[in-house]
Image (cartoon, rainbow, N blue to C red; front, side, top):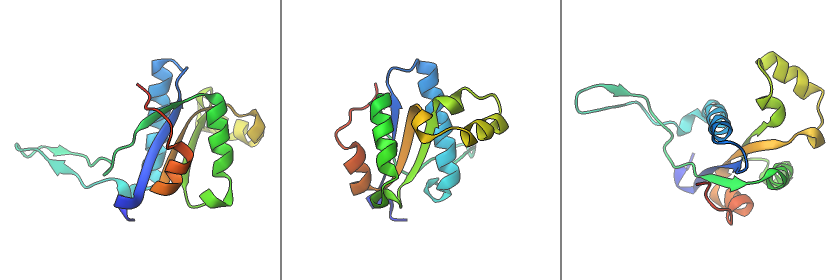
Length: 140
């Protein structure tokens, strides 16, 4: 993977409470780490020899959006042009489940139209990620 030409962003609904924003980012980040383990650097050591686990090798800006924008981005990610982009979505359906089994069952009975997205993480070629998110502001 050519890290110089890759980009990863998270777009999160800015109207969510801070705790839900943090939760969405954490869950999507864990899933990205599973899907793209090659972007996680090697473990490092401080000057006293204590180990610190490797982190992602490039920045992941958190951008602000709203439910309508997240839905639009998710729909675009199904287009053939973006087939090679890694996308992790986090919906209200997922956020409301207590177990993964419950999530899987409910997702199996839900249609795309019923989902309300709280966040989407997107990783891929810079040009494609920028095409989807290039004009968006940072979530602050």
